[in-house]
Image (cartoon, rainbow, N blue to C red):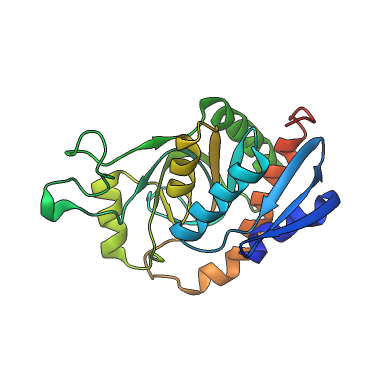
Length: 234
């Protein structure tokens, strides 16, 4: 969403813009890093399109997806930070023909397909997140966990419990798992950063509006700090 990328765009220097099939790609410098920024939009199809276009056109060294998510882990609260260690598409369901829920019809059909994040980037994101969280009065704890993605906004205690029980999800959103899948197919290291914006159970519907902007700002601050560590060629 616009709110999730504006703080990053505001900090970029020497920005040029190219539009490809409706996606605007912003190329420039963020701190020490040459970066390309795109708002891919909401949902798995948009995330897949934006990711593949970025790979084909810009051949990035790494791909990072940042934004907000709903809490599945009962220990998480708004403004807590989740660094994705792995990902599942929770709404991919071929169970009527013998596959486990979340299995993409590849590998072991009795288990959901799990895509893993890049270990080095997970460590860097975690370290940077802990530093930034310590500087933000409203920021919560940092958790390295599982992110599950699907084309639905989770706002039900029943669905929240199901995603936790079936997939061991810590946070739910609508893009990360498919972005990680597309990146893995192209052998490009990726990582996903999420700041919790709501409890995903409908108990506090106003919390999303309250925390969305704060969570997006915290997420952007972490990415900006991360780019200070990157060689300029990356």
